[in-house]
Amino acid sequence: MTAHIEAASPHVMPTYGRVPIALERGQGCRVWDVNGKEYLDALGGIAVNTLGHNHPKLVPALQAQIAQLIHVSNYYHVPGQETLAQMLTERSAMTNVFFCNTGLEANEAAIKIARKYGVDKGIEKPEIVVYDHAFHGRSIATMSATANPKVRNGFGALLGGFNRVSPNDYEALVEATEGNPNIVAIMMEPIQGEGGLHPMRVDYLQKVRALCDAKGWLLIMDEVQAGMGRTGKWFAHQWAGITPDVMTLAKGLGSGVPVGAVVAHKAAAQVLTAGNHGSTFGGNPLAMRAGVETIRIMEEDGLLAHATEVGDYLKQQLQAALGGIEGFVEVRGQGLMIGVELTKPCGALIGQAAEAGLLLSVTSDTVIRLVPPLIISKQEADEVVARLKPLVQTVLAA
Image (tube, rainbow, N blue to C red; front, side):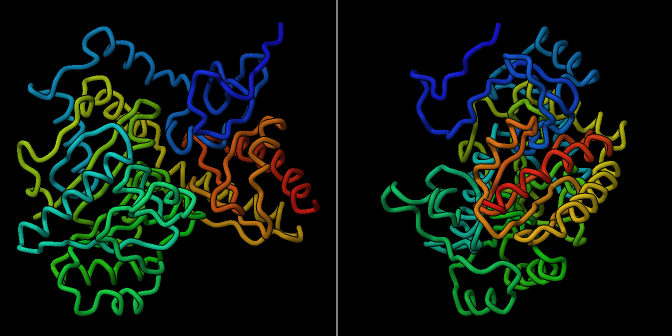
């Protein structure tokens, strides 16, 4: 019997423009809807399902944890927090971690760290440098740091204290901050996910790190989407050989279980003390087990090297398949964080791809985003290309 999928749920707020399918189960890089239709998942829950679906090592570990403890208050020590914090600090060469639930919360905490860092130094109105095309979340503070007018508009006056500059333009950064005594931090995504899969250049990242060192500013890296092995290193900024003062994580950290984290270093690690910040659900035993097992399995299965190998292969195949199509601009990205830019808006591709059995997303109106589970095979990468090519041809011919 075929189930009818309503275009809208009458008791759920209409905050999403949903494709009219309802997914029921998954295995590896494939999912099935309630009607039994199969889809190849090149979206990974928007870079969340690191290990794919129903992973044979992850699921038993989470089942075991659920049978022990799911949640306890942060009034008490949660041993899994120290385990996961140590794993993250060892892989980042940083020192301390605060746990929350989402990327928005991690970025909110990072903004609080930067502002308090400035206030503690006697700066009454601290300011943070942010970037054109950036996306940091949808709370009032993170929305204020975000560039996209579609996200920002309609909510009245936003939070001040954010100075916006162009990505990869070091001279513009210096000019925008010169002589401003209120700057306390620079906040950026090493690869702008929602902003169209635009990477910060290695030399730019290195110059910004040096500038922050010289000025005594914090360097905040929003690794919510690019982190956790997606680019082939644990964190995308590591390709530039730098270490930030604050790094935010979420999405792939728990492979589907909500986990967010703020990783800090040096002075930034000592800013927040008891009573300054907190989270009811942050760092609960289930979330910590998900993070610990995700990292353990990634290392056991060599997924960082796999992300590089299959990501390079997928980009090559996309370039070969789409390169001759009029209206195709380029393939860019790193590892399994890939953008395909077209000359035309292509938001309709989300629904059209689903009809063709492929899950993907579109960012910045004209960029197809592919962020599949890190377990995707080369054969499945070939399937992505085969299903995507005719869709691109159709949308560009329209």
